[in-house]
Image (cartoon, rainbow, N blue to C red; front, side, top):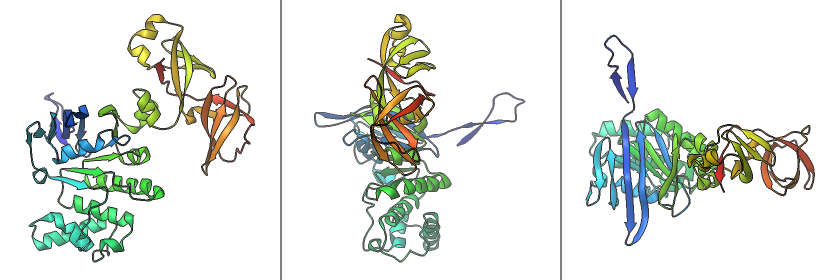
Length: 373
């Protein structure tokens, strides 16, 4: 983070400008004749945690390998702290990039103790300073007292912490995490993701993670890039990805929901079976000038999330319970509307309705998301 004095001569208030640690510019890559990435573009500022989220084969791990220096891009470039480290035909070796990396399988040395694993990346640091850094890292990741243990004596979560401590020990400029929680139990993943986020923020580390799990991505990242077929479909905050997805793929991949047929009434109203939704219509159709010009009658599909539906016994609108999934504090109901369309609704678990029962519902939509049909 850089403090820059305002240009006004009488002003004593500094302006904070974030320094870009990582810049990925129009990055492309191919294996032989097969394109893997095309035009990947994003920036990470100092202290920011980013995540590339997407299904297997979308290219997210290839981006990580290019940033680490394991491969050379076919087009575009990568800059670290303003200095170019990769472009076609020119790439700085990984060991010169001051980048830390946490691998999917942790890559710990089984014959070394926890302390020796953490110290491995400290190179020629003076012995006393090395020991202090190892102690600091053990405390940071919550493993004080386990310095003489071997990897096989630790749980999966503890091994992951050792891998993180080893990557952080040399004070990297950037930390890369490749599916770091995939070998852990589902219940542990989100918990550990939150703990890792807290550690990274406390240490002021800029980091980029790749994962296919949106819960992990949302738990750890400040900004997320949803990838599909070698492209970043949307680079945004988790909140915006959920509530304002840029296209159908993002809407379908992030969160749960259904698309209901609708008709645009004007530039701030759309009619669906459940009623009229009010708000700016951020649709593909509006962006292309279609609905605004053609007016009433333009057909769209409207994204309805489970949290857009409120169970209300007093509502005149009813839907039939077709399926239900118990989630402890709530049920996820699949509801069939009178017109035959289906929606999802999250309902507190003390409202335990039977399959086939009809319940009252009402809309509570804060963000209108629609796509042209």
